[in-house]
Image: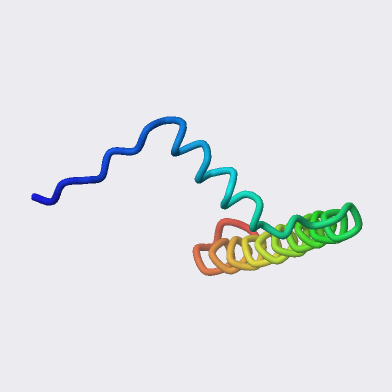
Length: 68
């Protein structure tokens, strides 16, 4: 069993701040474009799975003779 180094809360906070300073944060425009892209892709995925579900449902109903 290996021993883990003890880190004080103050040292931890200092290291977190150092790492946070290295992050390149997106500006408002980049964040807005990314958000819009996520929403558009979610809508496309929802439509795709809806159409696949409807197609499979129709096929099962047709095969089992429950309508169609």
